[in-house]
Image (cartoon, rainbow, N blue to C red; front, side):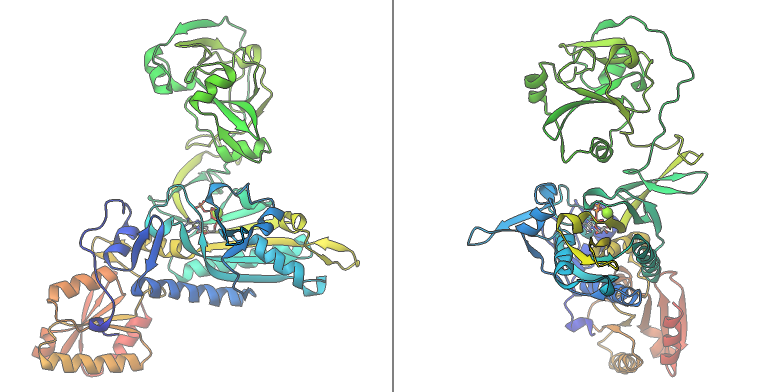
Length: 567
Ligand code: ATP
Ligand code: MG
């Protein structure tokens, strides 16, 4: 492709909200354009990379035995009602209404649609197992779309779904897909790690996330120092408190704490440590009020809370409602003599420790509240995020690394087939719900993660499997006929070997061309300039190392091809 005839333009000023390298570089190099918050156009170079990755996906998934399909993006409400996710999925679900008043959503994921397909077409165990996949645009109305393609609202996902007549058949496909995932990411030159994960709203029994470690990653991965076991912080178990001996009961004291509503204010005002305090969080769990107790220096894990309480939905009670519902004061809520609601506590709390808690009166805290003696705790549960340095269930301590989730595989079991009444005739001739698995990869997110792992201060550094072109051929001065002729014929000869060439034949300055080539990040640059005029030599530059090599122009095509193959 001649760059002079291509659609390519760079951005000088990158918007301030582009905080991470991949987002900045994709905008700067004209790979994408933001149309609206979390909604992007893929411009030619960006689209080429996306398509390269899609081809890797197709190859690996086809050889893993998965079959490509394409489902609609717009899904009728009824299917989501059947699976009971129409309301449960929450605000991320983009809903719309047609001219007849019928409701639809723009699919954020496709378990319902694929289950409907199986329901109609798979009747017998003889048709199982079946594994189908699609590569498609999804929409999730993310609360905080950011980082470009990393967390969009509209984004491209590869999603696969498998159907089985037994758990062992599901286990087999789950392992095959896990291996395919490692192959896919390895083909892109990406280092990934499978991490134990929470199955989230998609539901199911076992799941693993494929993470790329990067400081800019939005996920915290907790790694056990002994076993190497890695778990998403969402699912990382904490250890319950172990009492060596119980303390005796001490008497409760009232302390005046004006303008000390936040943990830090109490810590400063009372000169104590945040681990001496209890946070009392009022939460509405499926329309019932629950007070959740967490140590002052710990963080509530909402997913764990939802799961542990078997809740459909949880909402934090806002300040006005705190006053209206239990007559207490925002910032001063506490568990002592609070009879209006159930109380659950994090299981790492020490039941006889004399904690400082809110006094349920304005400007008042209580000292020496011991849960065992002073509060009716309904249950002690694992409710908080694990943090670095604390004990793991595997005999080590947690270490924290940041990661980007590029893929996620789940064993769904019969969650969807049961709620949607999708069954087949089993070997015994009886109807049985499908046992299902599902497997997702963020296409745009993986491309962005590849940039996070492979870029420098000059621009992107593509592994050849994802690079938009194989070689960037640069004619340093197209005004000189001798250079243009040499470049034109090199362009044709290189193309004839099957290489995909981006030929910079623009009339721009050499500096601009070199800068753009480094920004675009194609693995090999072939430069035809001064040394061609002097001694009929061309220069080859490796984008990743910056190494340069001079080659005689005659017979250089073979060598360039070999150099590219060895990249
Ligand atoms: P996250 O926790 O990052 O919000 P998720 O767990 O909700 O993602 P899944 O339902 O597991 O996402 O979707 C499968 C894959 O789709 C993810 O592993 C990720 O790579 C990609 N993905 C999910 N949400 C987005 C998004 N908003 N933008 C880009 N890619 C996404
Ligand atoms: Mg996920």
